[in-house]
Figure 1 (tube, helix red, strand yellow):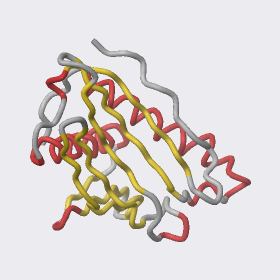
Figure 2 (figure 1 turned 180 degrees about the vertical axis):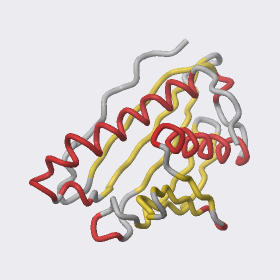
Figure 3 (figure 1 turned 60 degrees about the vertical axis):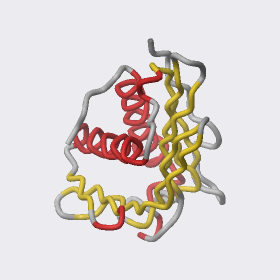
Length: 172
């Protein structure tokens, strides 16, 4: 059973504190990662999902670095920050470390995937971006970010949480 994803939380614009966005869906408890391997697989599925929908190349490097690129240019790069495995929460956090879509092509913000149980049968899966400083936010007073990059991120994250909450299959 899936429920509609929640709208983004926090400012859409990304002022001083950066962009904050969160998409969530409710799904079966079987989605709940039980160990580090499960949460890392969930993250790999997320990056593969994004790559498949946008025809980007998703490169995974050593030490948890992930780069989404198009035509040989890194659009966004992420580096594994930490994994949280607790009885009531499984989460994986990536620092946004650069890329053409990041302001000044340098570090800023985090992307997190988290799963928390609601009851014995259901859990909530969320994709959260916080503190992100998009390059497009500075162009034309933020119009490019607001009308292109932000809606694309929300569409991708919403689609992923719905796909995963519905029991999305294993991905390479």
